[in-house]
Image 1: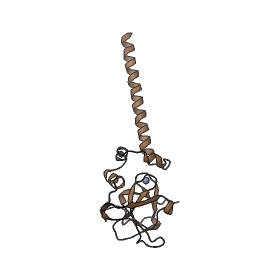
Image 2: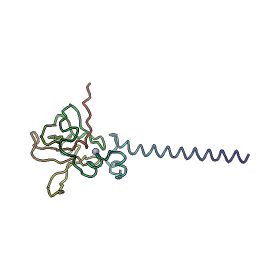
Image 3: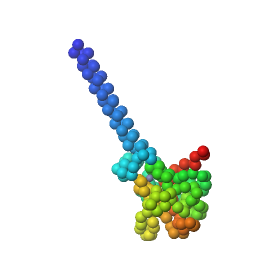
Image 4: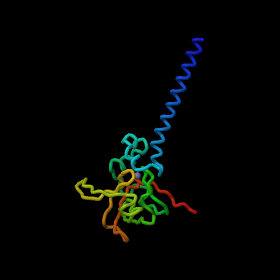
Length: 177
Ligand SMILES: [Zn+2]
């Protein structure tokens, strides 16, 4: 009898422990991957640690968006890409740029004259004095991903050129209704 009871106690402990492990995994997955959904708010992203971002992103995406890297010109997927659709933030899925504002700047990076929502919209800017230059950095307002820079030499109607790394973007073709 004692033997049976010890065995079932062992089995019970194992199943509780397996259950807890599964639940933890599910919660962790929830935190990281609700992170990709629109429902998550900005605070959820700001709580993510570098380790969390490394799990969620490829090394190239991490370097560009979290370490303010720059992809080589003419190397990305979108500098010469003109399908109709929306360019989302690769980190959080926020809708950043529309294909209707995209133009060929000849720079080798995807270029847009406007961001979705304008100045108070999906991107924000701040001064960047790195590399002995004064530039204006463009970030995703929601998750603070580094996207690229904005320059005052773009076409009308804004006169701006948002010069963005392809790697920081995820293209979603326009839904055909
Ligand atoms: Zn983002």
